[in-house]
Structures are given as C-alpha cells and as structure tokens.
Image (cartoon, rainbow, N blue to C red; front, side):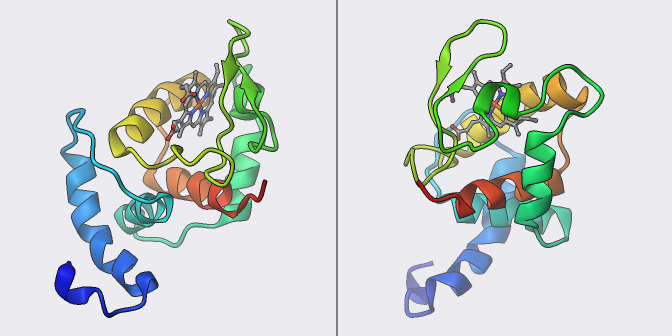
Length: 142
Ligand code: HEC
C-alpha cells in the first residue's frame, strides 16, 4: 500500500477494501487495526452493493421479529452510553466519533455482529446490513 500513499485517502480505502475482505473472511481472532470506514467499505465490497446510512439507522432502531432491537442496548442515538437490556450493565457509546475504539478491530466487530444479530434478528446479519449499520454509525456526530 505504501506506493499508493499519494492517492487521496478515499481511493486508498477502496484499494484496501479487497484485502480487508479477504482478511475478515479468514479472521480467527487476530487483532488487526483498521478504520471504521475501511471496515464498512470491506463489508459493502463483500455485499457487492453500496452502504446506505439511513437504511442502517432504520435497521438499528427497529425490531426484527424478536423482543430487542439494536437500540435496546445501544440506544437509538448510539452516541450515548447504552445499557444492556437484560443485565443492565453500561455499554460504551457505539459511534466512533464518541468512542475512538469502535469499529476498528475486525475480529471484535465480527464477533459482536454475529452475537447481537442472532439475538435481534435470529440469524447473522448480511454483509450489506453490517455495512449499512456501520456507515450510519460513522455519520454520527457527538
Ligand atoms: C442485549 C444487548 C445488545 C443488543 C440487543 C445489541 N448489542 Fe451490540 N453489543 C452489546 C455488547 C454487550 C457489546 C460488547 C461490549 C462493548 O463493546 O461495549 C456489543 C458490541 C457491539 C459491536 C462491537 C463494536 C466495536 O467495534 O466495539 C457491534 C458492531 C454491535 N454491538 C452491533 C450491534 C448491532 C448491529 C445490533 C443489532 C442487530 C446490536 N449490537 C444489538 C450488546 C448488545
């Protein structure tokens, strides 16, 4: 990637997306830092479609046939500290603008999408659903 550093970062993000997709597909808990935008773009590339922030907001704030929505634990604003719907434990804010650690560790992101989507939707989220949610979270301002 070094040779591409003269490109605007937007272009580099797209260039790294393919590599990230491959890395994420084979993830086995290794910690590999990335930016939220790189991860969101990698999911969109995997889905073969563009992410839509508004669709992500709707997905996050509504229920999908089960008791909880994502917002039940993370709040509908996602810039605020959440509260676990069953244990009551606080959950740090989800928006990267408020919490710089969010959406930077592919293994953590994958792990929690898998667990939480199963709780909320009764299945794993699709790559496009993940890209949508992440692209919405990235737009949020403190
Ligand atoms: C029952 C409570 C609960 C629900 C419902 C829930 N989550 Fe979470 N989520 C958690 C907890 C607990 C963590 C891990 C603790 C932490 O990271 O602060 C977490 C972490 C995450 C992470 C990791 C983010 C990072 O990079 O640190 C993502 C992504 C995520 N949740 C997305 C979702 C989405 C999308 C939904 C809806 C489909 C959802 N969550 C619903 C409790 C919940």
